Image 1 (spheres, rainbow, N blue to C red):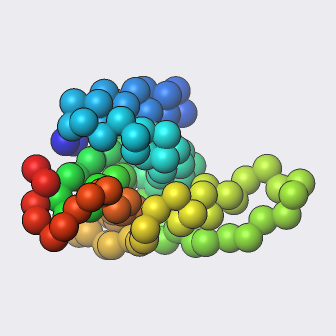
Image 2 (image 1 turned 180 degrees about the vertical axis):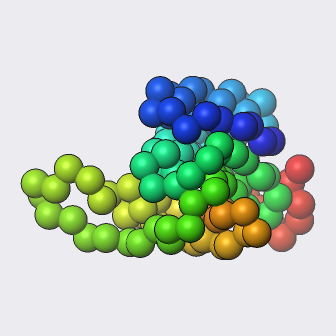
Length: 127
């Protein structure tokens, strides 16, 4: 599933709602809290540090992948922040809520992604 999103902080709540609806349709309600958090952090990061329009994608295959693409060239970094820091926890949260995460370059920018294990997956495609 893929959604085009404007670079507007107000879209973060809508991104969580899109994730909630799609995971409900796929019968993955138990993954909603973590995936909503992952999606909102990736979208927020793209709004703050990326460029151009955003694309939010959810892919259900061997794992559940949440990815956000933008036109920016800044690579997200895992930061360990202090208790009084206001920013910098997004990718740390993504890394804690996902099995693995990363970034890949595209001709027009980058895609930041996070994977979550699908419970009960035995190596076969669940789609």
